[in-house]
Image 1 (cartoon, rainbow, N blue to C red):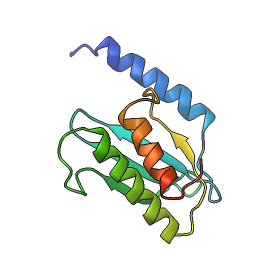
Image 2 (tube, rainbow, N blue to C red):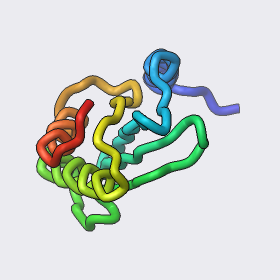
Image 3 (cartoon, one colour):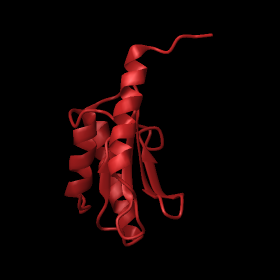
Image 4 (cartoon, rainbow, N blue to C red):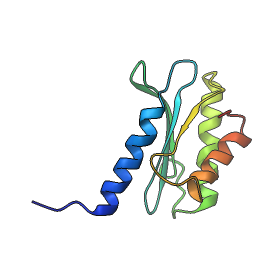
Length: 117
């Protein structure tokens, strides 16, 4: 049986810690961020209905390379799509990652496009 890396276990614990405190409602859905080495993904989720309302990623935008400018563009696109569905306020789920670098850039891009946290 494969052994799970200690870093993966720590990330999972942080992710659960953050998720215990957040829940997306129809009035204020959850903006979830997931990042990998090359890409960043964001989706707005209504946890009460159990469905994704809006999604965007650097893969869908054809932005290659995990950089801050790409993350900011993903944040702006997801905010524009959310505004089209009359979503103006969200709670930010950073997915256990530090609010730094690409995660922060995505949040800043979403704020600049008019989304409120």
